[in-house]
Length: 330
Image (tube, rainbow, N blue to C red; front, side, top):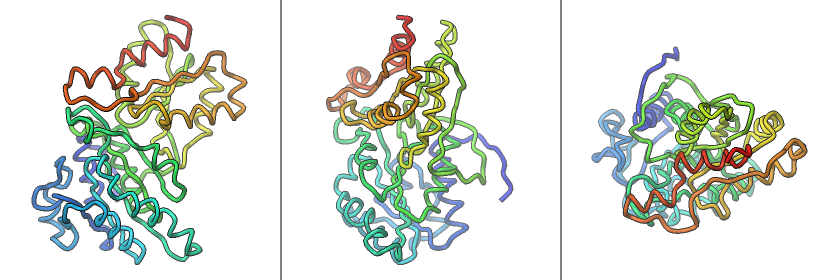
């Protein structure tokens, strides 16, 4: 396919990626609650039922256990299902199918069976949807062998890495930053991303800031504003959490001598801690001239009131304050 660049919202980029893959491969199909007639809970599948029909855009019963399990089974016999889990919180009901069936199946059958299923999970706060609809649970899945976990934060990466996820022969947890569905960005139509490869969004020399998903936008803004204070921030987006592009992070930390990790999930047990540990175990540790810092969500449930929600999710000022601490410019 000839590549061209278009401006799209994140929502449109998701639909565009799925549409392209379904046009190119008849084994790709979409399933989930409200994906057909309603067009998806977040509007990411509008018009797909009309193009592909009810056999490939399947409105399912309200049972995440059944949806996730059926998808794993379909993938094991040659299909490539895309599951719209909608709110990531609901994936808890499908955990047995994902963790005990999809993830270990290829290993348990000696590699004779592939499980090319993509679980799309709308993650994080920012919509006022409260404690049962705002969790960012990426760390749970990063802990499970056999799963790949991707968390793009720009429209372009949302598109390209979703196409890569659908083509991958392993189960992929695809994390969508639902607070950014309306954000616009450049999308290179036709591009297929590379799972396991990160990207330096902004080059800098004073501190490495690793961030992904929803927090990437705020990290980029913090880096831009800190320029005025003479602080040069290198913003690194891993895009893929598993497998993590550790080498890219290590080389960046060697260059800057400082590391700040930012994510919107709970701080305790969050994936940021894994990144910190990998740097501590690498030769980049000897290049550090400052403690490593984490900026993360508070260890509490997300309130429904938006003014309270802002207090438990990192904002631009939180990121800037932590970076100042890292570079000793409080």
